[in-house]
Length: 149
Image (cartoon, rainbow, N blue to C red; front, side, top):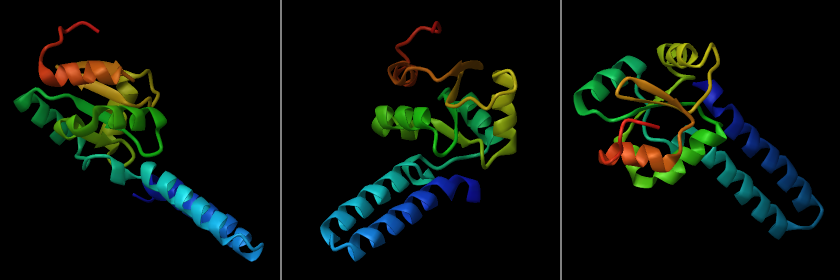
């Protein structure tokens, strides 16, 4: 849990330190703008941007029932953030597993990626896809795509 919040907390702390320096130097407007920027970066790199994570076992069970893809991700991952933002509201329809919170999820990702924790790793109908194009993932949700990559 703490690991997921390390980067956002560091961003807020660094932004605060720089803002204090700017305020003491007589630039309160610049300090406010910088603090807002660092706050926004902290939010974007936090678990708050992603749908609620579930465990890998539960995600696989739900996926077997409804056929929706399972996405293994971790906070601070730029590629995970790209996938999340490009999916928009469709992201809520996927089953998200935070590999930093779920050891079984991390093990599943390592098993699929030659021991590496490469994310996002998306599992569709039992097939693993590493860092897939967000448009392709959207197609998997709509059911229009073929089973090929």
